[in-house]
Image (cartoon, rainbow, N blue to C red; front, side):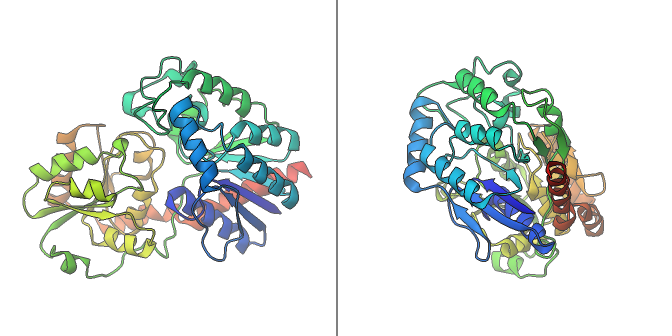
Length: 402
């Protein structure tokens, strides 16, 4: 079986890592795999094809900023991708994120409708069925159910349509493009997102929940000297990790916590940019983004607790990475973030409740959850088991098409 995965990135960020993990799972069982990606670079040893370019991405950014049209530029890059699909002739096409300034989605879906091949589309966020936003829980917005006619967030949230609100028209174009594919199955990592999809214009497609998985040969408890290097031998260490510390990831909550925690509690945040680090309270240790998974596992392992102050999320892999390193998780009750936890390994507090977040940290400090219970919970998120569910789905769809 030949499986083509299409993703904005290949190997970087949580979605890029999931794409490569699925690739290796299929490769091990003898399937032929190709990843087509739009930007950055691919890891060595992966059969990959880059259809994007800096020029195409730049034009797409301008189209988004000035015309409010995201997902409707990059026509030449999309035609390049379609030529590669026709040349390689896959049996199954797997879509991941198709936003991110890399694709003309109408061209792609017009091709998919004509090609008639089985398509699996994993929704890593909500962008496919809204007129603009990748997430909307921050403002408890429900306009995506009936057309996104009065968007208030088009300037403030990714993909940042700075100068024009074209949200309602984008919604209509997406609905026309994304519906009507004869053999398309939607996958969501969380039960929460599956329920949302069933209320959207994608509701007529079958939906399967496949939770994300992580590589537990990398994300595992490790001995290291990070505490000594950072002078934290006698501190209670609180860790936060994000790919990009945008508004919804809750950076402001950590800044507030830093002023209220006792001196022997220390916050470490990973994934910040240089400007954010300069603006941090002195009580927080800020670290820039790392693509080194082993280094990241070391930080998870040395922390006493992982705090995910996200205000909207699908099924964050950071929670899984922390659990796999034996570290308990505290998170807001939003989206699918609590779904990876139970009472033995995590604490869930009301979304946006800063005082409850602080008290949960104090509770974890006084009555720490056991590393062994975190590891027991993490077993179900071992990547090979989870991504074999993708392999089984591909083979079932391929068999139906033969």
